[in-house]
Length: 375
Image 1: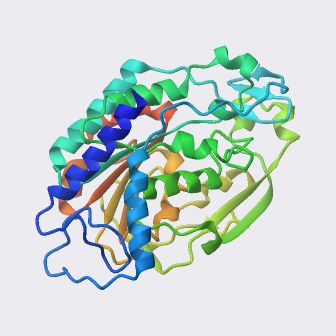
Image 2 (image 1 turned 90 degrees about the vertical axis):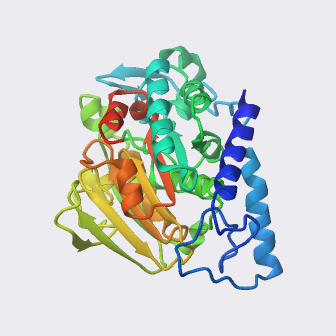
């Protein structure tokens, strides 16, 4: 089944390419990107590409044939870590908290149905992607406790099998290659910004657009962070005794940011990050100005005529800044607060790509029902 999903994902993207009037699927823009969608009228210029750029473009197209993996990556936890429930969190003896995922095939099917409806409304000239992020338990729950939670892999697979014209992004496999790095926050229910970076990288690869290496980012860190698991665990001492370092990655290309209310009123100039050293230590995850309440608009110096709309939960807040080198414009809306229509927003703002990005708890939980009201 995994192989068939991969083939379907590639076919969906190729159909998006060939359906675009005025765009040669073999053409490339001035950054060496293969043409996916039609360019706005009046801007059809291209430049000759170096052999290196063409090689990069061809490699990206080739890589997309394996959008999803055929087999589940192994759980890296060797089982030597004991744990116990504390409040709503399973706390390992090393101080990492894990929320135990309950699964939900029928809700996942409903989530896929909503995305399919969006795809049908926006048409073949708009690429629609689904990135459902696994949480801590998929990679760090010891094998001996595997029956404590449902399989996020299986639930994400089921969602992907029910997608129609929507392209899945395999963040699970991408993250599994970096489990020895700080990709999840030990004291918070979110992934770490580094995990969001690797997921963004996989999305950019799937979307056939450029992506800046992590060496291009400014790195800022703050020690002593204890996040939401403090409260979720009823102030478990093991959580409190193991604070962690919170690290953010700030893109260095040129961009400007605007912020609006969730109904597109009260637009103001803004920025992507607060001062990490100035925010309350327990609220470091709120450093991102891609938040849960409003609409964020980022205009970048990436001139590739790609305009991205991210429909999200809070997992995507640190992911959006990682895409300023990948899209000319980025809009981010939270499905729990957005007051407009997604499909109409796509048409009104010339969106070329839509990314649904959220964790499994949203995609197969109550949050996904919010999508039905904003199609």
